[in-house]
Structures are given as C-alpha cells and as structure tokens.
Image 1 (tube, rainbow, N blue to C red):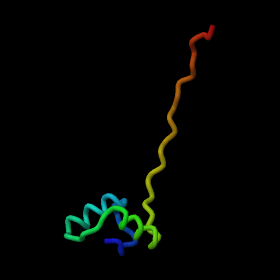
Image 2 (image 1 turned 90 degrees about the horizontal axis):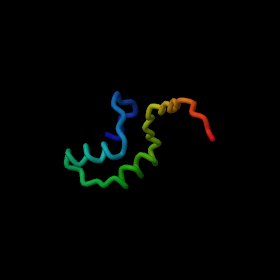
Image 3 (image 1 turned 180 degrees about the vertical axis):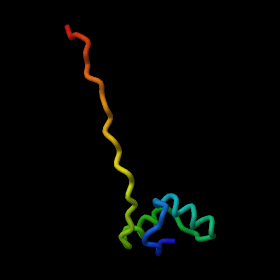
Length: 61
C-alpha cells in the first residue's frame, strides 16, 4: 500500500493504518507516519478557503 506513488484516493496515516490492520498487518500509527516520512509520501490536502466576513456596520459609541 505504501509503494503506490500516485493514487486516486488521498490516504493519510490514519486511513493507511486502518487499511493495513484490516489486512492483518500489526502496525500502529506512529510506524506508518515514520514510513511515510522516510519514503517522502506526503498527502496533499485541498487549501482551505478564507472565511468571508461581513463588515461591521453598527455604530461604535
């Protein structure tokens, strides 16, 4: 699972850990994070949009 360079799904360490545990691999999240760091696997998350605020129109006394 960690050998697949380009996937359609974006898997983070939590999801990879659960998938490996479902397949019978005895891994914990710290180990998966370490392997991802060593292999240079980075999940690219979409950028968060800035919140649009409404200008304050009430008078200040």
